[in-house]
Image (cartoon, rainbow, N blue to C red; front, side, top):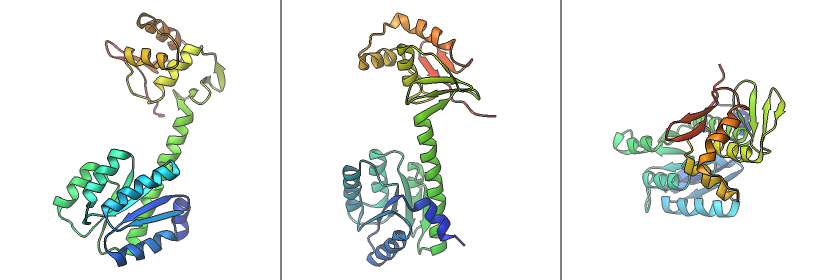
Length: 248
């Protein structure tokens, strides 16, 4: 049995929208959700849910943390709603309610990457269990994202703090030039992504700085001497990237 207090620990600061055309189910489920979530909205069909989703972002500057939706709804069904939400926010967490086991309904949603299914008729304990597992995952994602937005671990000793452009080796700072900081900011904006010479030159231009193509290799060579061995990779004819660090 799910402990309500445990669930509340994960949901109390989150927002959710529930899309369901069946009035009684929508109202009853919304009442349950209000016991756990900070903000709860409900929509009677997919089209209204989409409109409310956009309105919520315009008002709050962020998307709902969680979307709960039925599959079969008028105007815009759960599959089409999911597609449109992922077009807006590819990382949106979505849970689908379904009275069907038919792969005709479920496979498109699985392929889209939804979080979980809840089978109708809804079992209360299974419902809470799904909410718990989803919001636990959501918290982990938020924690990880917050950490990665602040610092990138390059190996067990080296880390680069993105907010102030500082490189550390065992908590001892290593001097970086202005151009090296700009380059590191680009490389660590998405660890593992390869940035071409064009990306690099354009990035400096956006920072109102000049970078010539022929000077990129010199910059890389100097920076590589300050970084841990193997962390800055050159892909011949393609570009450069920071390799993700995976602790043993």
